[in-house]
Structures are given as structure tokens and as C-alpha cells.
Image (cartoon, rainbow, N blue to C red; front, side, top):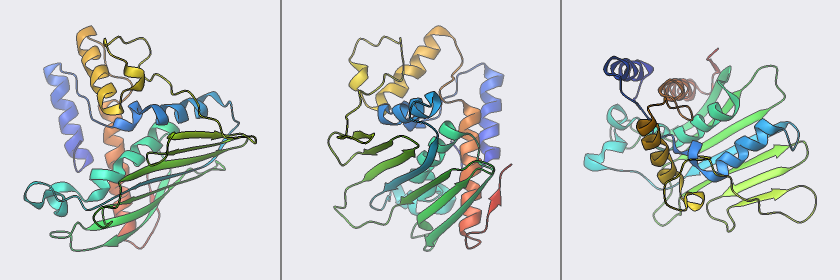
Length: 248
């Protein structure tokens, strides 16, 4: 959305002044495998969530005029790639009380800055461990990987874009392949959106909100701004050798 919360606030204010819908492409909120995880957490069907580990790693992102290798323009892989898991954490669990991050860093003007990072999202008073790994430093031909493992009191849910089927549920017997949910419910697109990617689903949702004149709820501009705020705290933590940075 922007590289600072102030930039995001300016966008929100401009949209309000002009009476416009403002949507940010935090696509995991529309990804069926991640929607399944949210439903599992919200429903409590497997008991309380105990731990969540997420991974989003792959090769170097260069971009037009080496955009992604310049922190001042691209914000590093943390904004290009890892930010999606930060956003997912806020969507699933709310704003953390603090973050603690560690990273491998190169020249921030020419080589991508923090190219590999690990973050702990700290929720005080909750017996919960949440972490995410993000990178843009893998060699050529290493397949882009996004995955999560969620451990509940009574089950484990595991997702990986590199396995087939992508989603598995473990409850003590043979692993199950859950039916993927329909994140958009009753919205009709004329296509089989139950099997479509999150990229398509988020567009269907945005255009539906415009047609019906209703505000966005799945991903609000304010929630996207909060994600940017958390990512900035992660950068500060990584550059302070993993010092905890409070958010609340």
C-alpha cells in the first residue's frame, strides 16, 4: 500500500474526500487455503490454536530499473513478499503486542537490503507461538514456496503450494484433504470461483463492492495500513539485532 503508515493514511484520506472505494491487494485473505485456516481458528472446531509457522521464500526480485533492490523505492522483500504473512497474522489473530525480527542484510541501495528475515509475533497473555520466514535470496530455479503449519489442540493443518493436494488435515488418523471454502459466499461471477485463485477472487470482491455501493470488509484500507505499520516495526527490530518492538 505504501512504505510508511503516513503514506497509507494520506491514501485513505484522499479516498474518503472523493467518496471512492480503496482496496489493497492483500491477497491471502482471499486464498481458499488461508480462508480455511481462518475458519478453523474462528470456529474453534479443533480447539485453540497453539502455534502457527509461515514461510514465503524464493529467488531475487529485481523489477524495472532494479526497483526491488533499492529500499527507498521497493521497500525490500519484506514489503514485496513477506508482508503477506504479516497481513495474514493480523487478519487471523489481530494486532500483536510486539514483534521480534532477525535478518540477513546486504546493501540497501543495490542488493535488496534485508533479503532474508524471521519474525516472531508476540501476543502477551496468550499461550501462542507465531512466526514467519520471508526471503528473496534463493538461487535461480529454486521454486517459489509459500506454506504454513498450524498446530491446534486437536489437529494440525498443513498447506504448501508445492504439494498436491495443497492442504492436509491431521487429526490422528490418515491425513484428510479438506474441501476448500468459498471465501466470497454468495457473490456470483459467472465462473467457477470456488476453484479460482485468490488473485481472481479479490478482484471479484472489489468489483462487487463497487457495483453494490458497499464498503469493503474483508480487507479495509485501515487494516492494510496496520500491516505496513507492523512491517516497519519488523525492520526496526531486525536492525536492532532482534530487539522487541512494541506495537500496543
